[in-house]
Length: 428
Ligand code: ATP
Ligand code: MG
Image (cartoon, rainbow, N blue to C red; front, side, top):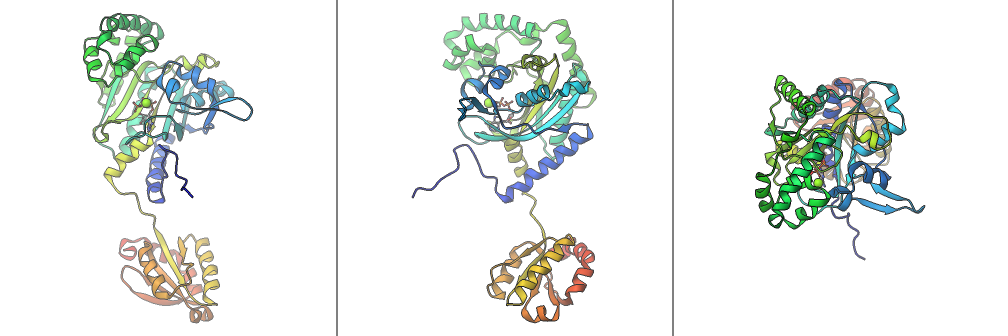
């Protein structure tokens, strides 16, 4: 029979990698909690309509990358290609706006896009998504950017760069779009096929084409920044000023437009030189029109998403995953010893010890070898003689030192022993 394999573009996160993901989650949630962000957990599939309306029909994500299917009730369902749209749907549906003022929300979980899998690009990937809803103030833009950089810094990442742009208001973009289309139409023959196609559908996206010849045409294209209204320019100036006040370095990239339709004003990306072609770890921006577009009250908002696969690729370059540690590896053999070991393990765990029980029933020698490989600080040994006497052998695996003690004493001195187990000399 042929083997069943994981779907192309998906990956199993094996136990030795999960420690790193947990570290990301712990660090991020601590940074977010300190700034009063609250976690929310929306479902991973939604009506297709939500993404079509929210992200925009003309985007690559909606046009080419969505996992869309009909369910048994004939509804069109889509596995979320990003988190923001679902989060905004939840904000509207649960009337979170009724709580008044500003809502700060975050969510971490999978997203799905039908893309060509390669390093840093999967079909099921994961994002940490962070949003502020209800503030038009440039301070909100600066707050989320500062949080993104804080999370990445708290994880120990260096050599990241922040690109910043303003895509202006809807009106600004409309005027710019006309100027851009005029310019690009005159150079249509020099554009790659994809970009020619975008000229009518989504011309701004041509700005971040990776095609070298198209790039050359774009170099001389009109700049979005020349089309900002006074209000948009003021907002952008304030964001820049405050980022500088916080000591957050950035460079202005007038060609940064981001893939989704709903952005207004601030757009930003954080890149790493250590990631190769898929260099963007974090993308975000302001989306003042989205909540209203999805049927909610007029609510300005800004947020970002960090791609967790790319983030963990970077973290792996820094350090190996933290190893799982164990206090005791419990070996036993014999008719009386084995059930006694089960009982002892249970009592130790109730005393907060981390205990792995060897279930093999094999010779003590083989069990000892596994104890050595287990990463435990100490091996506990129970034979029938110990079981009958109510004792146990404790062997510190780093020094080889072995003592016999009564099981009641082991349990009675457990907190001192656990402390010893956690000191590096004992734990080896
Ligand atoms: P890219 O330019 O890499 O295609 P994007 O503009 O499509 O990114 P966003 O929609 O802004 O990406 O998503 C935010 C982040 O999610 C990205 O910066 C990236 O880190 C991550 N991401 C997006 N698509 C994928 C994918 N297919 N696999 C892994 N990570 C992804
Ligand atoms: Mg993409």
